[in-house]
Amino acid sequence: MKMAMGARRRSGARWLAAAALATAAGSALLAGCAATPQQQAQAEVVTPSDEPENRRRARIRLELATGYYQEGQAEVALDELKQVIAADPTLGDAYNLRGLVYLRLGDNRQAEDSFRRALVINPRDANAHHNMGWLQCQLGRHPDAMRSFEQALAHPMYPDKPKTLMAQGLCQARAGEREAAERTLARSYELDAGNPITGYNLARLLYMRGDFSRAQFYIRRLNNSELANAESLWLGIKVENRLNDTVAMGQLSDQLRKRFPQSRERQALDRKAFDE
Image 1: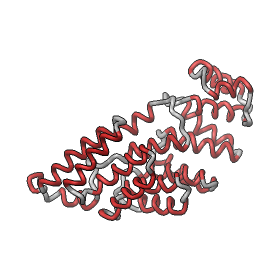
Image 2: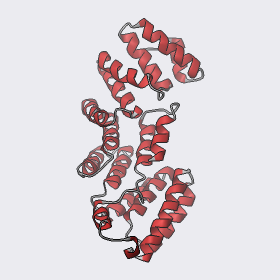
Image 3: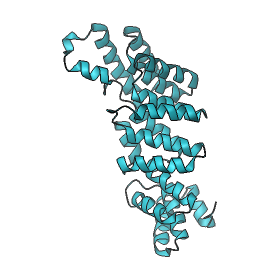
Image 4: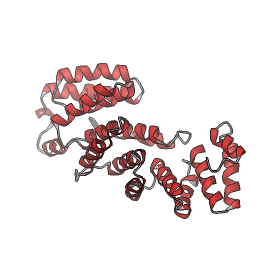
């Protein structure tokens, strides 16, 4: 979860689909931290001393692998995961994390195989369904992605529904389903109004549809926070331009010039390319 929060504070990050992958992967790293429903129920009656030695050793190494992944050391994490799986090949969280590692390494085939293995072990693993859905979206398999996202959302105890709704909405937008994307992102926003990726992309869809007043609401909330970046400021400028609010437009333009002088959004502002 620390990775997801850190991503929010990197206000210079770009908030389109590529940023969503980083968020999805980061917050899906619940392996070794959050248990599956079966494991949670079991944990109420099984003490640490009752856990088999191979499972205990596997979980310790899984924590190491998670740390290496979070630090950007994908190859080292993969080596640790090989030892985790050798110690306990029934630990679904290990396959889920392995899928994320392979995603980072650009090996989609191995990533998909890893997520499938996690789901064979636990068909109700919402995190694995989420990660599979995002991978399927990247591969252009949008109907499959929607099914995977819905399976993640169907779990009543799944704590990261806002994250999955965000990813689902971005995938729908990528597939050209803008109305559905707008509805899905609005649901995500209701559950987590502080997510800048959700707020930005919802405002962007509303702007594209011509609903400038509603777009203004979402993008102003974002730009009034510490999470504003060049991309959000530029969208805010375009929204205020459509609404003929020259004062707000000027304030945002000043921020963009001062804070992000080398950005492409600054260049677009100088060209007055409001309709590009």
